[in-house]
Image (tube, rainbow, N blue to C red):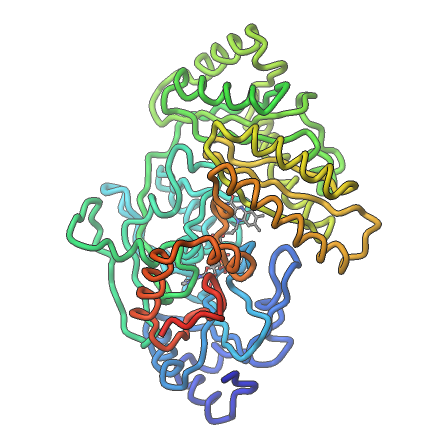
Length: 477
Ligand SMILES: Cc1cc2nc3c(=O)[nH]c(=O)nc-3n(C[C@H](O)[C@H](O)[C@H](O)COP(=O)(O)OP(=O)(O)OC[C@H]3O[C@@H](n4cnc5c(N)ncnc54)[C@H](O)[C@@H]3O)c2cc1C
């Protein structure tokens, strides 16, 4: 049964759990928590609750469990699949933003512990000040929270060297649906004793519990970073280049981003002065980094010299300064922001085997050209991980409601292409509410049974983020 309003008695019980400062139930106070970054979704909630401690999260969850009140955990609200906002109402949003302290940095053991609401950039800055690196890096790092990164198993630009959030997390602290606390933070890098329970919560998108604390691995801060912006004739050439770079630049590649030249226009919407350093249909941003005294410049220059000579690369600019390297990255970041600025667009997060990237892009472009003429395809992404964001802009003159209706057909066609190549419909953004039907429909009966068993064991009343990740039509009790 959907609750439409919190009675004064329930509100006062909630205030008892999280304090008056921790409750917003008026439209103005809730507004900033109910809209997503891209402007695609508008949420609804009975109240936004902002606990300030683990004990307050526990008290809140005990109360919600008693009342049968559904909960939507929210981090920085930068997710791109509507996991942290729900439009139908009858739920409370629990924001972790007031739990934002770094608990401990241990530079001898290369570990850091933080509250789940700590913003990723704050963690990265604190590590840098201690000569360490926390390598998770994404465009939203100034707003997303480490708890949200854990809950979504975030990826980003450094995955090919350091792995996804799942590979970087050593321990979690979680408040379960009934308010019980599980402390899985132990400071150990190796702990091979039984089920690795933290992995259940990583990528669970708030459907199994509220993450309140996270312990992560750190690395030595790179002493040297070299960045180059390259022009190539085709996506096939980019994949060949990546394979060669992996072998010839050892394990020092920290990013390998691919950008179709059609994306540059979008970066110009954010900074009209944007000019790609090369003119070529396919562009690549490659970064090498090392904490040891290795002559990275000579390594990268030698590699690129050979690639230019063989014709694999048609143009290359090696950044001469940190500012120039930054300007390369500004293109990559600007093209994402430019899409949001342009308005509604089809957004995907596909992954295939690295060797299948050219086929994915070729088939997807052909599909859009024939089935949706006038729509503008964009291809870019973390090519070193086989992750391509194949996004499509509707024709500018199409009314938004028509674009949204047609957009659903475009997405369905793109998913078919990725799955046909043995790929995934979600490389790193997760499932949320926007992909749950497609996700669920593709699972085998055995897979569904295991997911349902986990959900009903950890959240028997179905209170944790109902409607996210798992379809509401299923019962998990
Ligand atoms: C410009 C831009 C660039 C991006 N680039 C990337 C990228 O390169 N790679 C990538 O992977 N993602 C990317 N994203 C998506 C997004 O930033 C990540 O998914 C991020 O990890 C979400 O963190 P958040 O704190 O904002 O979580 P939210 O958006 O608040 O929540 C996301 C999900 O996690 C759950 N959740 C949040 N906090 C908790 C918690 N403490 N306990 C339990 N559940 C919780 C929510 O219920 C929701 O289901 C990008 C987004 C933007 C806007």
